[in-house]
Amino acid sequence: MLPLRLEEVSFLHIIKPLSLDIEAGPSTIILGANGAGKSVLMRLMHGLLAPTAGKISWSSSGRQAMVFQRPIMLRRSVLANVVYALKLAGQRADAAMEALREVGLVHLAHKPARVLSGGEQQRLALARAWALHPEVLFLDEPTASLDPSATREIEAVIRAFDAAGTKIVMATHNLGQARRLGDEVIYLHQGRVVERAPADRFFSQPATAEAAAFIKGELPWG
Image (cartoon, rainbow, N blue to C red; front, side, top):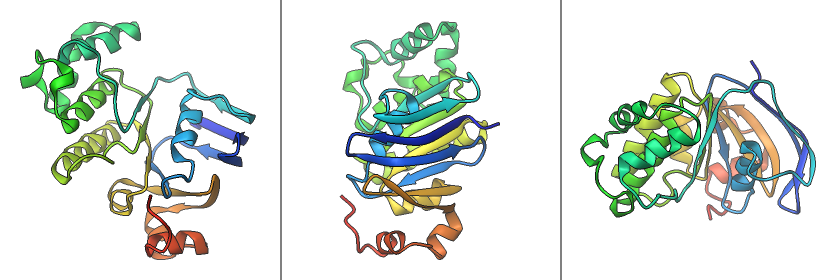
């Protein structure tokens, strides 16, 4: 199944006209330096922004979710944050505790969400997404502000989504993370897709000068 198609999509001066098919299955990494347009592209795909030109279409009505670099925590408990997400989606609230179990936050279920650490808040954001059993999960730099330990925990949850059959589309500027989590890489440079390839080939044999320079650290990381 082909969940998502972008046809000559552009957004202001940030995203130049581009066409992409995002297919079900293997995880897709949107890689590029800060300022390349990754976050805007993710918001366009998720439907939070409308393109200036072009068309975005889905071939299925499957559920989708998005987790941001700095998730918004509701002023209520950890458990209530997940329950709210379920109610908003018209689903039963009894799946909330299981979602917390999946991300290792059951012991904090009744703690105020806003006092959690950055890594714990990101895991809570992933729990809200997990409870919805999304067909596609968009992740926008989900570990950019986290320490290595918290990053490992988040990556473990992302792998669990992948193993459960959720399509992962993740934006990052982190080469190591892209290697660890990506099956394919779409390299974005100055609002343009300049290369798309399986992850192993992208890193071992980049086909464009821009991608090769980024891998070597010769382009700004942001």
